[in-house]
Length: 306
Image (cartoon, rainbow, N blue to C red; front, top):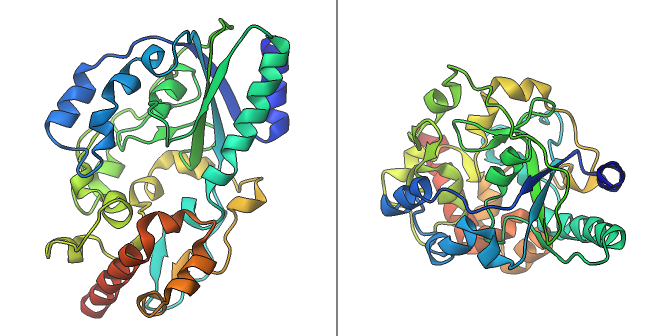
């Protein structure tokens, strides 16, 4: 049974699969993180904390959580134009929310044909499921000091998905942590967002600021956010494990329209229709045109004064 499921997952294009027993998670770390307001404006993290900590509350009857990973690394960076801003590598292609759910559903339907009595719920990161924790418990990789999942085979440029199942399966051993004494990600973060190993304060995270934050930036953020138009890859760029990053096999994740390095002046002057056309199927639409223009203004100011 396990062999058939794994083969199907790989045939669909996933780069790895692991399975862990569904169980209630330790709430101490998460509650401390919330109490310190490290979730910043992401209030949904607080509202659905019970679902995140106990998968049985989110999906009654769940017994197994199957995790999959999908490599999104778009390959070597293109030549960077002068006075351009950066977009995180995960956002240079088509939005993974338009791709992974269909792949997960096809895999889940296959599993339920093997196990007709089983029910499932597929989840990507929009669901109240701790994807990185379950991927670690399923042996796919370990959560690094920057809080991203790291795999020995592909590094950390990966997406994660889950299938919650009401059936018991063969389970994997949790992954070992191979960060060792390395602190490159902590040392490289320009805002000090990694306040201690494995703990990220979203208020200081450039990815949070440029994607999730709504409204103007406080003045002190303008220099700290550097030249990032959307997201940030700094902690991943310095991670030694990303020397194993391989170009994705998923064509939709490859760079389109020169998005990786983009002229912030063009963004600042962009009309709504152009924004909608260019980013309709891109993760960049998450920050809305107002947020992207705000980010562009910040990048312009940074580049003029650096």
